[in-house]
Image (tube, rainbow, N blue to C red; front, side, top):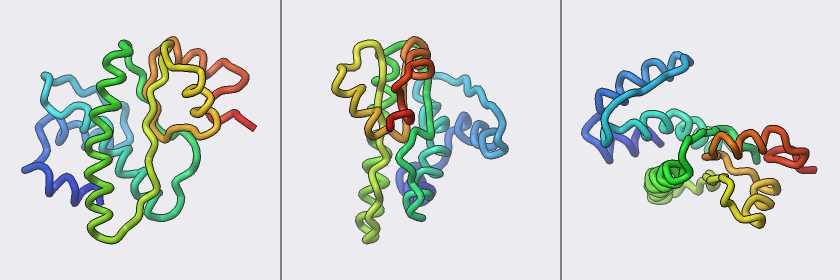
Length: 151
């Protein structure tokens, strides 16, 4: 599904994507350093989105956070979240055209400014993709009630 979406949407991968995906597919830690507009965000996330979509299609999309992106800047984290929503929406549209109903892959941003009701919601229904800051990640990892640790 994701591969078909990509092929319909783009002429082909950018050099950053092509080189990054080889390393990511091999399970290696990967650093993608490339200019703005070179497809880094999609290179970094598309592999994970593909895995989440495949799990959703197989009925195995768990109610847990599977992908964590740590952004040094809150504003960058918000931009990343917006940049993920577009491809996800287009993949859902493609699935819908084919008569496939996909469960929603949730993306959330957690920073020091996240309102309490949103933080509570993330505890009850964790996002599949979490975008956070280093400070908020520390809180999530050390708090008694955090993502994935709710009763």
